[in-house]
Amino acid sequence: MRTLVIGASGFVGHAVVRALVAEGHAVSVLNRGTRPLIGVEQLIADRNDAKAVTSALLDREFDCVIDTNAYTGEQARIMVTALAGRVTRAAVISSAAVYSDGAATPAREIDLAGGGSAWAECGRGKVEVEEVYREARFPVCATFRPPYIFGPNNDLDRESWFFRRIRHGRPVLVPGSGSAVYQFLHEDDLGAAITTWLSRTKDALGPIFAA
Image (tube, rainbow, N blue to C red; front, side, top):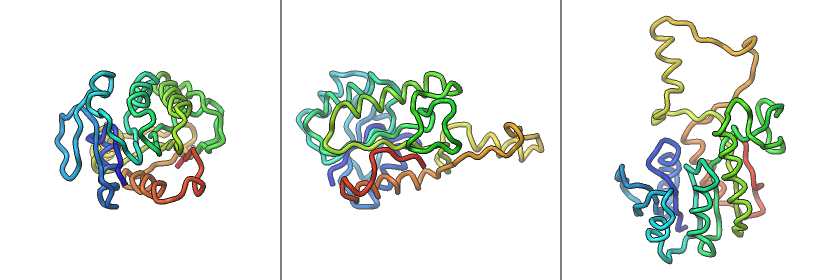
């Protein structure tokens, strides 16, 4: 399957690319080209530059596009406009941050999305991204809403923060009474979720996935 991955060189995007390549997909990536990738076709453009994106994609057609790093509605609009009519499947990596205050813990696909107050602009931005992709009316479109993602390639100060404190004998604060339930997702499992979705028919899986 001819698959275009937007982003691809960062933590989440690279995990998706690795999974796609392992499954034998013909992978093209679109990013700024700051990190060379092996085994894929690399298209160079800053996703915030509409002209550069259009020029990089030209009249290319793909079976699927997977957007791993859209954080604002404008970023999403640039991409869906450039790909209009030339992609049959689309998947956007969103976030559990889209769920409104009062959603279940862990969140469910049916919970109201509006952006939780704790996530501020991040949650609201991801809500806009989802709306743009949904309104673009791709023949098949799915939204993945992973919770906290961890793994050896994480470039965020997340699990490493806990490990440092534990190693130095410093306390780790636990929210509330310590009984709160949170979900964590390994980077490779997110990649596997994407490839599983691609291997199924459009009716086999729903349009929104909360890990």
